[in-house]
Every structure is written in structure tokens, then in C-alpha cells.
Image (cartoon, rainbow, N blue to C red; front, side, top):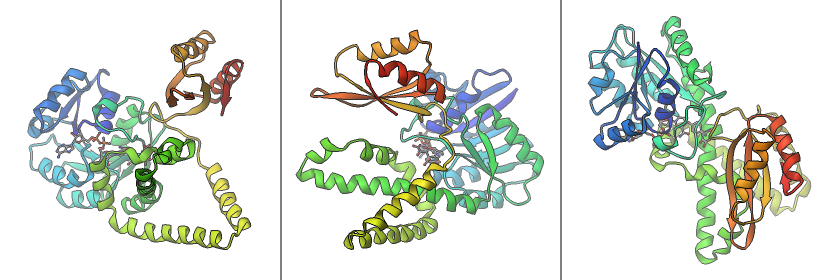
Length: 362
Ligand SMILES: NC(=O)c1ccc[n+]([C@@H]2O[C@H](COP(=O)([O-])OP(=O)(O)OC[C@H]3O[C@@H](n4cnc5c(N)ncnc54)[C@H](O)[C@@H]3O)[C@@H](O)[C@H]2O)c1
Ligand SMILES: O=C(O)C(=O)C[C@]1(C(=O)O)C=C[C@@H](O)C=C1
């Protein structure tokens, strides 16, 4: 029996637990210092065993996953290596920054215990075990940042073990990881939050801002609703990288100020051309349940039973709906439904079918 211990069973820890729980050959143990959380984990059936005792969770575990906020990772590694661990066990984490934990863990791990930093590039703005899903990591990249001297065999063993997540494991140097992820994840979170807060202040004197906020504002600000304590830790931890990125960001904004001051329409269009070209080359969206795959948008009248009718139409045509989200629904305006499908073909068939009765946008 392979024992997996998960410390911090929230969105990411819970999703990992669900990748293994109930599969033959695995026992999943969840740890939380809070007895109420332990009760909740058992009630939800996310883990086989839940405990408030770190020692009990860690005892005889083959794989120990640290899924707590970034600011606690170093302390957890230190506490764990003091415990009687199973020889050959692998401690890994899922933190959104990798340099500090990879370096500090390398300094404290002892003979026969391995630490390999990890970061699944999948998530959502939601948090807590309630948001966990066994599909979260499907087709996402899962970064491992083994420190120098980590035996290849152990990295391969963890890689093979992670195959249950259906993620694609890649190896990246920890510092390089923090630079890249700073730009493609941490900076966007800062920008989203700053933008929402700018508009929030305008809205205090004129609530029309909130009412008129449509697709563009919503698309760029979904992640502004992310969990504050998780992001506090990430941004403080990746301080040096982010300060440099924010300086570059100031440069980008200064460029726009200048273009607009000079009414340089061609310069502005060129910026959009450049960004559109790069964005068009991004790999197709790859993740599982929580992020949409192939989306279509349907304008629907706001009356009872409309969602049921659409689901029935799709079901009768054997089109598999992966996710459904009401983006707009107010009494006085039609609603917009975002429907997500696993592949382009199903999205196309759905567009054609629903297009007979509703306005469909892709
Ligand atoms: N949210 C994402 O999109 C995402 C994606 C990849 C990696 N991560 C990383 O995964 C880790 C967990 O994030 P999450 O999104 O699952 O957050 P979460 O809030 O859903 O889960 C955090 C877990 O840590 C526990 N925890 C919080 N404070 C604690 C404390 N003081 N003592 C003990 N336990 C505590 C919580 O009870 C919860 O179980 C973080 O390190 C984060 O950087 C997050
Ligand atoms: O999709 C989201 O909501 C996320 O914020 C996921 C996201 C990201 O920025 O891409 C956030 C933090 C992680 O460490 C990895 C992934």
C-alpha cells in the first residue's frame, strides 16, 4: 500500500487527494491542525484518514505533499524532517514559488529523505476543499524543481507517481521558475487586483461602473477574486522578481501614456497587433474542469427553465457539456451563458444546434 500524506487539504491539496483516493493500492491521509477541518475532510470523503497530528500523518508515508500557503512551507519541511519518516520517502510541495523552499529544504533534508519542489500550473480563483476537483490537473503542466544532487531515480519516481494527476511533468530550475511564473501568473494577479480596485473607487461615487462592467472587465479580472492569504504569501516571497517585473510594467504603461498623449493611432494599433500575434501562439487551453476548454456564449432570455431547456437540447443530441456558467443574469436584460466543451467538435455542434434558437457567440 502506498501512503500519501497531504498537509493542507484545500483547493490544491484536496484535488491531489481526489486523484488518488479510492484507487487500489493507495491510502490518502489528510492533515490539518484544526479539528473542525479534520471532521470536514472525513465528512466530504476527500481522504481515507484525517488527523491533527503531523507525526501520525507522516508516519510510514511514501509521499508527503505540502499544500499550505507559501509562507509556511519552510517551517513544515523543518518540522517534518525532525519526525521519524519512512526511509526513501519523498517530500514535495505545491507552492507557487520555488526558489526559497527548494533551497531551504536542500539545507535541512537528511539521509534517506528526499525533497523535490513541485508546482502544478493549474488552479482557480476559488479556495478550500469545497473547490477541489480530481480533474484540476488534467493536461496542465506540473513543474518539478529538484535541487542539484537529487538522485535522478527519485525524480523519476515522483514523476511516475504524479501520472495519476494526468498532468504533464516538466523540470525547471527553481529560480528560472520564479522569474517565469512571476511574469505569467503573479504579475497578472497584481494587475487584475489593481484594476478592480481602481474601478471600485470610481464606483463609490457612481454605481454605473459596476453595472456596465461587461465581458472585457470580467475576463481580465476573474483572478482578482483569489484568496488574499495565499496571494499575500506568494507576492512577498517572490519580491525581487516582482519588483523588476513591476518596473517593466511601468514602462509598458508609460508607453501607452505617450501613445495616447500623442494620439498615435498607428502606434496603438501596432501594440494590439503585437500582443494579438503573441497571444494567438499560446498553446491551446489545456486544463481540466475548473477552467473552460472550448467555450461558446449563448444569449438567453431570463425566464425560468431556460437552462434546463438548453441542457436537454444538448443531451438529446448527445453533446457532452463539461461546464456551464451564468455570466450575466438580471431581471431587465437577457442573460449570457458560457457553455464549455471538451473538444472543438462538440463546441461546434453545440453552436450549430443552439444557433437555431438562440444568439450564439464563440
Ligand atoms: N490557488 C491556485 O490556483 C494554486 C495553484 C497552484 C499552486 N498553488 C499553491 O498551493 C498552495 C495551497 O493553495 P490553495 O489554492 O490550495 O489554497 P487553499 O486556501 O484552498 O488551501 C490552503 C490549505 O492550507 C491550510 N492552511 C492555511 N493556513 C494554515 C495554517 N496557518 N496552518 C495550517 N494549515 C493552514 C488551509 O486550511 C487549506 O487546507 C499554496 O502554496 C499555493 O501557492 C495554488
Ligand atoms: O486559473 C487561475 O485562477 C489561477 O490563478 C491559476 C494559477 C495561474 O496564475 O495560472 C495561479 C496560481 C498558481 O500557482 C498556478 C496557476
